[in-house]
Image 1: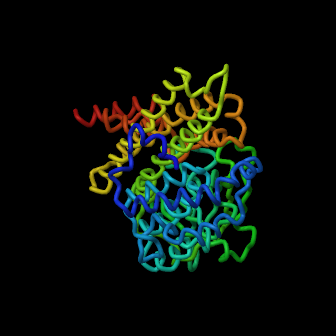
Image 2: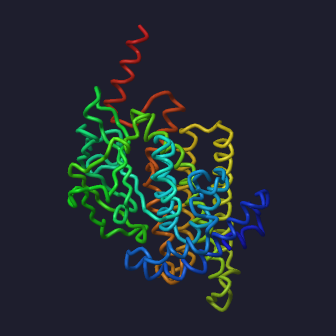
Length: 417
């Protein structure tokens, strides 16, 4: 239980409703029994446990599609319950949690937010049940955080579109059937960004979609990221998400919603790491005494607990405001930046306390310490999320280069003359 020791100081979960508490308990119980024992070996091999999704389906039917509405095969939980389920799973392993959030919160959610009724009813239920895997293809190798600078293109032909371009860091890309691809529509004036649902099984040319596992990662090694290349991959007209055109109205809406859950992942990682650390020090002796009696150790534990509480409470307030329709992208981005930055400090202190064993996978800290690094970067880097909030505070965008910002300010000044 990642809250067992913390609640002796600050019981963060006391105000949750019974259903949410029940789902948290289920996620933790399943994770500790079925997922946690596999982490050291599969993290070391950088492989995804082949039978873990089947175990999740069999043992956690009430968590399948937990971010999705009931009418499309999900559970219909609100964002607060969704976020706490993600937090509970992340306390066991962030790679598995991210696999589900790519599947549900990015791939399926893109179809729900930007697709039509036919696309939703045809594609989302199988994604919810994990019968087919999906991925979200936005990031490109040449631009990274500058997601609006897309070079992947969609060219209109009879009956559909041909998709050409390269994508990088695509979670679930190796096994995906459903690829939600964000590309520029070259057949429309201005070449707006739109979503195209590309299915692997629909390709007559087996080389139209080529995937390569990204090797050598030192963070979230269980999560399978891929480079994905599209060579005139086929997307029929029925799979074009044409009702939402332009970056802000298409992919921007998806990222705003998904970033709420993502902000909770560091909270879960930290709770899991803190609990492992407390368990460790209660059994460890040094210089003739339990190290739990060391003043420096206790100060670090209290500091970490306070950090986790602040992360949790800020994420909770963000989620409450999101449910009330009062939470904007700057607020969501600020919280995501805050939880990942503070999270790095917490897991680093956990590793310090556990000493040399903190870099050994079997003690449950090393993988969490390393996995936190990925959260600091994915779904909006710390810097980009900070600049989104900074733009709201100042009215000036500093996301682009300094010269671009200066030119933008000059244009605004001239327009006022």
